[in-house]
Length: 164
Image (tube, rainbow, N blue to C red; front, top):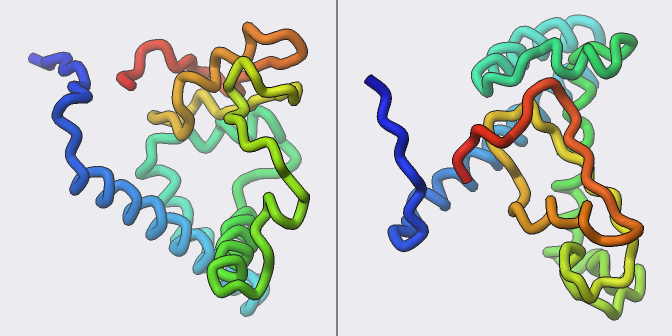
């Protein structure tokens, strides 16, 4: 038998949240490591990086064909990890004050959340419906009700049967 357990927001466990954050960061550094192998050691590094990358993707229950169905000319490869490197590099530079924060660089004055009714910017919010979890609050999905904004779920599966 399988029991359906509703998430109880009153029993917030900070240890579980910190564990999830650590796992997310570890995942990103693992993917960056695979990318670095391909970058530094050419074809041999790409081969080794792919042997390390495929079990990680398989362990997340994301079907490999999910990406390939949308882009058959671009199958999964180690070079997709480059975005994590550049993201972490930018965050590190901002943390060390070697670079201004994004909002300061782009002179952002209005810090109203994008999903707010009061936000003046039109937003197209795109997310992957094939993952077994969401990386955004449900508030973002209300953007489709706002004039000039829309929400698109990419993938084969919907998110309606997931907890959260």
